[in-house]
Length: 80
Image (cartoon, rainbow, N blue to C red; front, side, top):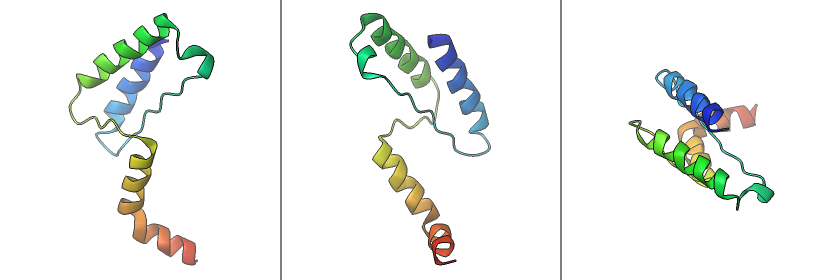
């Protein structure tokens, strides 16, 4: 699982040179408390933190960023 998530991050990080990318990690509730998976998450975060320009954000922060950046475009599309 760690290798897949690290590869996914690495691909998105390279793609982000052209435009913003989002990596979303979703955990099923039955897996949250498992020690081995906690280590996987720790290792993934260690890997991600080694890269410059990465933003750790909550969903509401991403939504606010998108709305602020795209408010005019969204308003025009909604009016059409």
